Image (tube, rainbow, N blue to C red; front, side, top):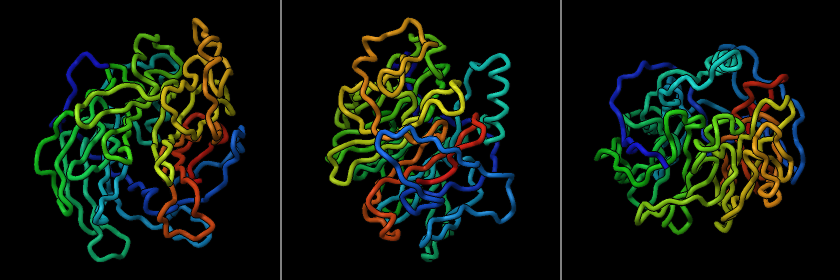
Length: 374
């Protein structure tokens, strides 16, 4: 857990950078859809997007249509659809942090990430988008909450909106139809953060009974190279009790979990995980898996069960012997982020009955992979 107190919000002025709005997985399928095979080592190369062309659109599956819901946003990263159809979008980026990626490797990584839009100041706000005339395009936009600290995941439970800042879960009052938060955020529970904060995004999802939040906390390194001491509480999904704010790890060994979703009957929790880099173009597959209470999934000592990573010292074959094998391989470096069940979907029948996974796309693979919804 962090030693410094969490930050409910901050008021630094940040340079605004215009970016194209992300489309919500909860609203539409926005690219070519594929199928998954249980336990498969997926990884058929997928050509990444070419240079931007004015008017270029994602290509949807047959029977679907893709259009921009909102544009001109500042690095939109996560969405929440509210009960009345309003959409909250987290305009956010990594917090300022020490230079933890030095040398030639660090220079290359930063250059590539900056080209993808990372490495710019965070807007640190939630914007509310409203489609007042029902044409599928947001025509009203307000700043719902500002001065947050690299916000990402959001969940509405009753009349309380929970937001995952990079260092804490905070809460705000919400009434259906609100255009702006009625009060400043209050800290519910601190989250592991710290000065390195390698994987800064924190996502969250409420339990079906509304008593708990499940929160993703990514690792503080690629594969333990910053030392295991800085990994305390990280590479895990946490459970936070809403009544008390008490938090504890629910499952561990998950390098960088992002999207969370409940099964259709609410009995099982699922996540998508970004696995480690620098083992080549085709290792290690990112994956979709059930999040089992108390389970260990291998990071940093290994991956996909007993596959040891020789870069991590000292080795822990005893722990790897207990590691749970993830359910579905998605392909190496596809950067699976979004996750949503297809329940109540208006999509064609052929696309209903499973999960949608948004693949952000590779930054370090040739040929590039991901950049689609499957």
